[in-house]
Length: 112
Ligand code: HEC
Image (cartoon, rainbow, N blue to C red; front, top):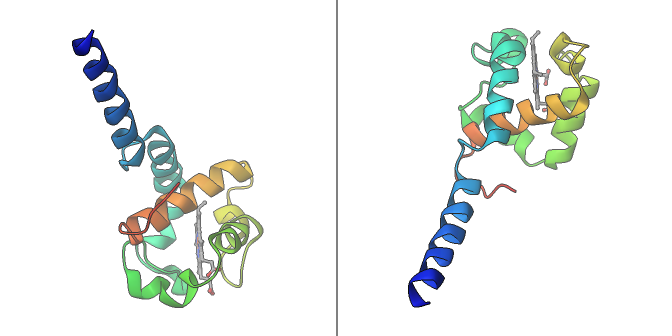
């Protein structure tokens, strides 16, 4: 009986750990969308796009609510085209890509 309980505890622990890792399915999907649509501008900084992974580019933006950044990604913001110009993306897909970008840029911040 004791063995069984410790197995269950271990399984629960592993599940908890894997949901924190960036390799979660959510992050994988966001990464794929990001690479397809967003990386063109956000890897190189086209038109002043904040570069993914370069925290200082995001400093004056990350103070905003994440929801505002997600809304800007969907609706467009100054030179940022709505949905990165890929109108066929759903709002959820754009959110996943934006979440991926922010996670790469601020790996230390807790995510949900
Ligand atoms: C055609 C180039 C281009 C593409 C493609 C693009 N972006 Fe952007 N993005 C920009 C530029 C330029 C800015 C900076 C806007 C500004 O502040 O002038 C920006 C800003 C942002 C911001 C910050 C908005 C804010 O409020 O500060 C987010 C978040 C973002 N992009 C997400 C995305 C996501 C997610 C995708 C893919 C679905 C994407 N972008 C695709 C050019 C692009």
